Length: 353
DNA sequence: AAGACCAACAACCGCGTCGTA
DNA sequence: ATACGACGCGGTTGTTGGTCT
Image 1 (cartoon, rainbow, N blue to C red):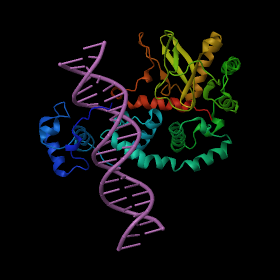
Image 2 (image 1 turned 45 degrees about the vertical axis):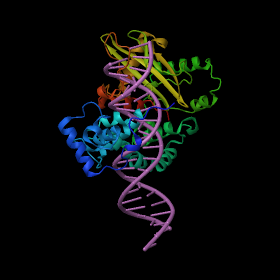
Image 3 (image 1 turned 90 degrees about the vertical axis):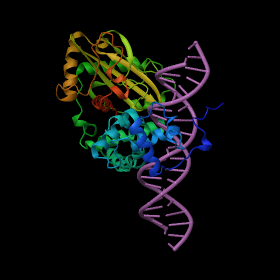
Image 4 (image 1 turned 60 degrees about the horizontal axis):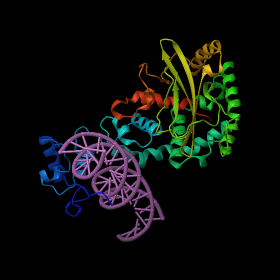
């Protein structure tokens, strides 16, 4: 059984709007508002249009302060970054660009921006292989959309900073010995874990990989579906990063928690294959003595950022009753662009090449 | 010149969510 | 609690105009 139609399809006009229709709709809404009921609106105006069509026309074309075309470089970059971070959630992306509609951005992305970026991909990939000699992540283990976002992410990274440290192993930070210890312990643990059916993925991780700042090299986590990270403040497991809009790639991330007691570092590994998510988390205290933890905390982040700048890190809320990381929410009404960029940065840090 | 093809954009459609009676 | 209507969103389709052959 299908859904009841919102209007009498036989008696509504479809297709392009005439200037007269535009004027009538604009005039009515400016004088009377929408009345909170789009479905009833066309009858009030005396138009033979579907209410949904009126709403779309108003939102995308007639309402004040709408910009059309002429996307700037800054807008391009923002759209790319947000698309890679959160995918095709156009309304959220549009909320970050003043005067742009989701429909406009969606069209712009599909017709121009995607091609603009992917059009340069071949050369970029060629260069990467020439310089690194390391293959990209196996494409057949990722969905097409996931792969596209990953490709775009890498493409964008190289466009924004062709000399980024991803392409320059000499810039990769040396691991503190305690971090080496973590990795070795982690690998030892993982060698005992069940990897049945994951040979291909394990092979992927057997490649020489460089994980920024001592991120853990471990192939299988415990949880599928909703990835979580343990909040050491209260031992709650909370959704990791943008759970539900997961960046489809092999990735690791690092979470630093600050509170009055100092730093607590959590290394979280998130592995995504065929849209399934495997997650693992390790806190320093699992593997290191107190002294080693203190050393690692300072060295890790200093080397990571070259400063005390924590802008690339996910920070836990200090609210005692907080059960989620600050980046777990993607409500457009309370997700400022800086937070989004912060998350984007965070994922950049987690790349495994 | 004309048909084919393509890009860009507008608009539609169906589904999930939310509010309300 | 639930049924229903409206809204919002994202994917898809339709239309138009330009370019190519």
